[in-house]
Length: 225
Image (cartoon, rainbow, N blue to C red; front, side, top):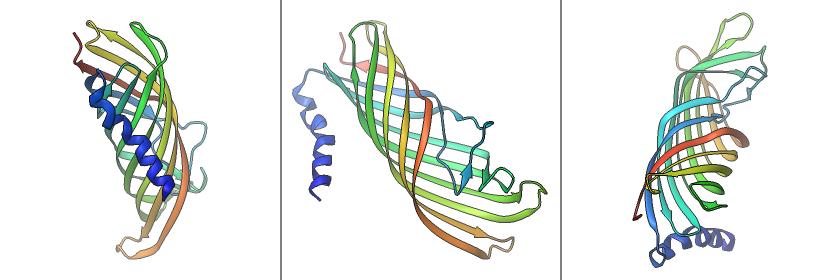
């Protein structure tokens, strides 16, 4: 319990002290994200796998002081035709509707001053993912079962990036990359064509997601002269 209290204090002290620092607020849109979706079930990814491309899928608010930017972000992810190999690439192919949403808070630290600035930081967040689809034999193509997956979990996302400031620093364009560590609670329900439950399993899993382009974001900075 003491560790939890310490973590909460560490996260929110910057926001409590924000009003005492000469600072500005930034509001923006996540233009592009090229990153892994969270794995489902016993998903197997081979050499042909590529991260998922999402556009205009999030908003961000930043509280900027002279050294750090403390940020709050919400995002969504969706693919109506998402497919993956389950267990192995010759076992099962599962296709269906993938939907995800997340909220996270964190910070970024500029490493240099000037119009172009490298930065690093970390986020803590929560994500919910739902998936509904059907499984088929990977070789024969025959129907196997329907599946319904529900994931809930927290994650840690350390990142590095670079940003450029334009129009007298009123507009900032930034790009970042990182690796996400996700701690999931997952419920998997399998049903037949009559919607009768075949199996229902619950797991706690640790996942790793790569984010070659975690976010390409444009923000407008308020409070600058």
